[in-house]
Image 1 (cartoon, rainbow, N blue to C red):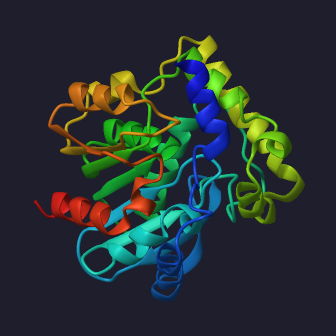
Image 2: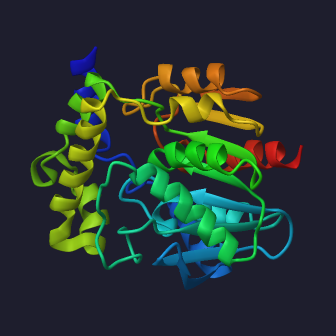
Length: 289
């Protein structure tokens, strides 16, 4: 099973983040809509400068947290556009990614906790004391930590593509994609090389090494935080996700109090892109409850 998963991973994604390089034209147009409707600026928060995109002028605030290597523009164009009619929606390039450089990304032991505090600090600077959080992949892990650390701030939580721990099967999958020239698809390289240039390989090496480090320290990412959550939580997942097996979202749904779970039967890792309209409708209904 592990070897089959590695093979699927190498063929399809080669990363924990953007998997829409071959998206249909309608999905790509969504990116243009988001860019046209949104505004961007640099925000000083938590001792760093972050590239931040905002859309929408009314409704409760929502922050969208990107995955590994991801940015606001690559990971959440459909949500910046789709949520803006009823929410003040924010996304950002995490520290060391995209336009939140220099300096480049580093991987201290507490990098997920740091990402969580960065997101909270950005929202505070923007004037939002309470907000909901949407997190994808690595961003889902950081979002869980944010909601646990800042229960007074996080109203509701939406996560997908995350994992509360890593085990050897996960490490094998990451290692299968470590060499970006050999293992990444041409589309993925075309998407990321313009952003990171010669820094792409060392940045991905850093992520793979960080995952190995977590494994060596016992594998836990956010189990305790997940079990301590107080806010209503919506867990979504693709039933055919080649990166994150179904037992990860099932564990979240079972162990997070007040959580609900929805699988997209044919979905993979990019359910919010592949099924943009359906995903947005479900999340907006959850946020409106």
